[in-house]
Amino acid sequence: MSKEIFQSYINDSHDITNISLNETILKDIAFITTRIATNKGVCTVLVTLAVYKVLNPNQDIRKHQDSMVDGFSGRSFDTKYITPVLATNGFNAMSESGWLTRSLEQPLPYDKDYPGKINPPDLKKAFLNLVEEINQSKENAEKILQVLLHGYIKHAEINKIVIHRIENNDIEISKLIFLLRQHFEYRYLNHGASKLPMLAFYAMYFILVKEMERYAGTQLKDLGSHTAPDDNSNSAGDVEVIKGEIVFEAVEVKLDKPITPQFLMVALKKIQKFKIQRYYILSGKPPKPEDIDEINSLIFEIDQKYGCHVIVNGLYETLKYYLRLISNVQEFLNKYIELVEGDSELNLNHKQKLSELIVLLFKS
Image (cartoon, rainbow, N blue to C red):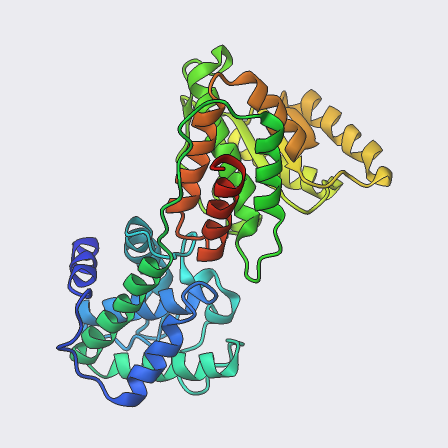
């Protein structure tokens, strides 16, 4: 029932004119909610603590780990009930839990002495003030929760944009590659652009799985987050094609990092875990010459020991090759537009830039 209760609070938070809180609390919430995109962990933890207090009024929610005396597992509650609902509503959500943020996961209560390095200092002060207020009562928790959720709703509305779709299939591949390169590599003032190539390859595999005989009987796994570190990720790659219980093919995309032997070692762990049959590692940067022999040696070793064909290649070269294979380039581009438009981890400028490029290159 926790998910349903949380969703009901979201539904009721579109209009908060009847909620009364003192000016200091409102200022702290306003400061927190302006940082939904940049400090997702802090925002998620606050929402989790507020929901938990509403459901368990006698719990001291400052004791956010069950290893503490009379504590509870905030991370487990978040992973099961909070982050999935935030994501379902199109809000800017963590990949798994707010407690994956190092500054928030220390096994000490969230009181005035909490040592976690939450930056900037004003954010830490606002966070701990709100935790204290939430902990006072269920009534406080409900009010703060709804104002926080109203901030999520407004943030999602601001970041909503409709991007023009392409209406004909007369698209030059070279022009499309130029558009993608410009979109991926534009110098944005915030984070998130590294997810753009991942969305492009997901759009490509959306078509490949339908059209190519090689993928008969396979299924494209739902798109995951791009914010989790490799060590914390439960996925085989940025894009996953599954066949029954096995990962038939996985793709890892690196926009501006050349492939190194270390990337192959990370891939090896995933190959061992998921029994992957084919694994692509694609980058917008070529490997360093001094790394090539070791990379090739590791590829050969992985093939011999685990039967997995690892392919290291250029990001744009691979896209260009696939664009020649598919029957409808227009479908690929419109799918990419759809994914960018609806992605809650991207910021407004990532979406606006694609809209500008579409108009510039295909709407003249």
